[in-house]
Image (spheres, one colour):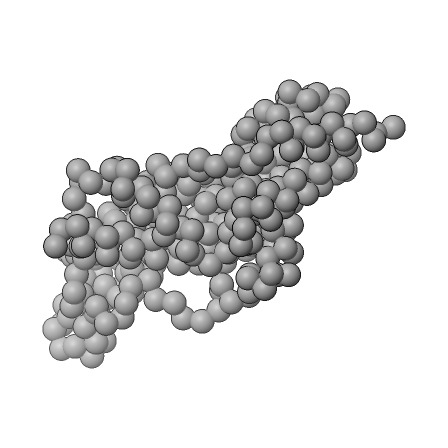
Length: 206
Length: 82
């Protein structure tokens, strides 16, 4: 049995401690807002989703049995609310994120599979990225923009895995995904963000 | 024909996430590593995917939801409790 890092806050929250509530808001609020924003159009609606989710958390506290961690449970609640709202806005198309063939790299950048020398090898290989630019503010803006334009399901997964550093198992549990689907979504998300960064670095080098 | 590790570059870019998660079976992971030893472009590609994940971690979430509204929500909930 793993001890939930939020166990103490949970106990205080159950006792109605306002400071504990605000500490959790501080800790998970920004992430909840990002998850909501990946599904709905406006900041105002996203704020409403976060409010509803917290109310859901408070109402559900008595039923929460600690089978998942508190953060996984909270995230699950906000993701579900955000999806419901997003579907009403017809922005989330739930299944499409996992359907179809979405190559990680434009197939035109590879030689054909029947190439006599390098079948399926790079025709237009990636250029090395400029180390000194990697952590520049402008680069990070590019990353944020690239993430914000991903389909909702991909955005959720890359936010949790890479931005927040959650383990794959935690993400699967919070978002009700199989390990395989979790990985497909992360793969597509990272591939697209990488491609956008590549375009950006090629532009600044030109 | 030159296909290091028996995997083409076009295939490498599709299994890199599984590789970095340690989710490939041992045999395929070994072939991929063999490919990377011999293929600088794919090595650069994997480095870029790693960099992308690192940059995402650096691009932290800066927006907070409205704290006052949430505090009101909390207080309203508490006062309605038996």
